[in-house]
Image 1 (cartoon, helix red, strand yellow):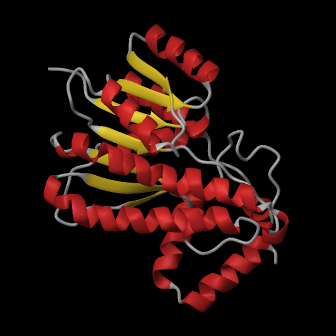
Image 2 (tube, one colour):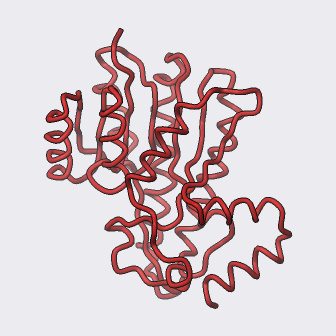
Length: 261
């Protein structure tokens, strides 16, 4: 039997890189894609050093044609795709009016449209693979709109909605769609970041912890009431649990306190 396959975007560093290494250690054939060729080459060397199989390629997730090309190349041997991990993302923080509009548009294009384009292009491969799965890298910022992260938060709300809709829509094709919900993670994306929330909560999660959570979530049984959202880390689990039982005004108050606004 051929090895199961996982296609990961934003794989050259951070969460994507850790996820690629985690799945490689468990015998998966890795598709690692990013706009950083040197980071991908280093990842390839590490995976092959572990005895794993990996395909790397440059992919701008906002380019739908590039998605189609990369997916066709990666799946050419077996014509199937077991897991798609939409991980690529960018972040800019600060007061909304101070962030240039082109920077805000880039967050929308990469964080949301990039995942949407990937889902659209990957659907035929997922449909033709038994028990295929999609992992969308969401964020605790999608629990309630976050000051100093307004547009980033909005992209994750949109990705949350897309995840929930497709989880229902694609059940008929035996495609499982889920979302990971980390809080702030120690990567280059959060290096030097200072917001009211990071001062209150800190930046405590590591990429390896998120990668382990992704692997665990994709290896759960599929019950009649499948789990869709996976908070990562103790802080996120507490915040997510509170959001399920507290009224909107209380969520607003908590967010305001944490954001120090």
